Image (cartoon, rainbow, N blue to C red; front, side, top):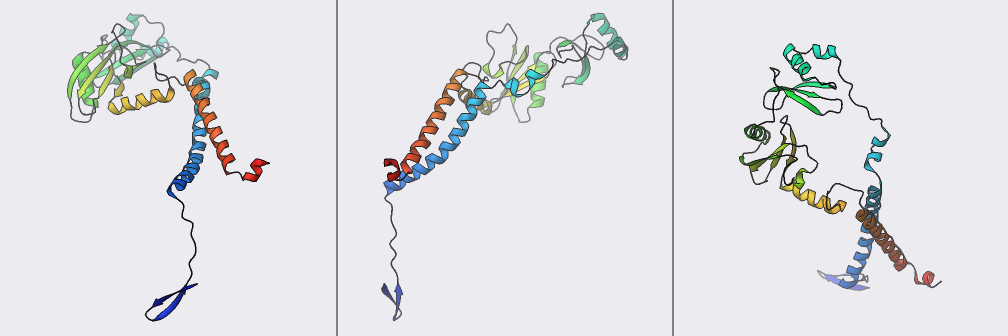
Amino acid sequence: MAAKQTEGVLLPYVCIPFPIMKPRKLTYTAHRYLALIIALQLLAWSVGGFLFSIFDINAVRGETDARAITNLPLDESSIAALPSNIANAINELGYDDIATITLTDRGLGPHWEIRDSESRLLVNLNPLGTQTDIITTNQANTIAMRDFKHDATIADTTLLDEHSESIPTEYRSGKLPAYRVTLNHPKNPHIYIDAQIGRITARRNDKWRTFDFFWMLHTMDYKNRDNFNTPLLSIASLLAILTSLTGIALWIWRVMPRKKRKA
């Protein structure tokens, strides 16, 4: 007990010892507890990553248990109900498997898209019933500029097809033939357009490319980038699980009373 004088009056106060931890020990203690917390989350991530790497995504979605059901072909009465010039044009083409006939406008005016039971495009007809070829470069530019909402100009337009020397990685598995329209803009956008019907099939920019790069590192699929079922990912996930488990075990052993450890 000690006393403190305040305006002529002695006031008692008590000195309570408070243990001050040295910076090195404080850092070590904080590291131990933080490592335990993050190890639990790392373990959850790793177990999830391991399961992702061994589960077939099609089986997860239930697609392997579903019957392969396709659209049924349309009968003659359905085609006859169309405008006469369109019905005559379809009959002249002589397709046996026509499942869907859609009138749509993708920015170039209305067109009839005729597809088979597997949704493959058979022919594209204009309202007069005339078969249309692939869209032109100018039409692709028009669609791209109509889609992009920021101020930009056309930098380049390239037609990609099965004969192209290389298909950009950012358009892997994309439908061909397709136009790649490059725009002058800080985001470096590329807009990919189906050359047969004028439908936009992909939009790419610098943010997407950065995301895609780290997605590749995450899946450890350094070739196609989209396959979760890679041996490298399975091995890395198992190693991460072992690392987390051994770290947690060492932490428990460290905090266990010494007497129990000796016993």
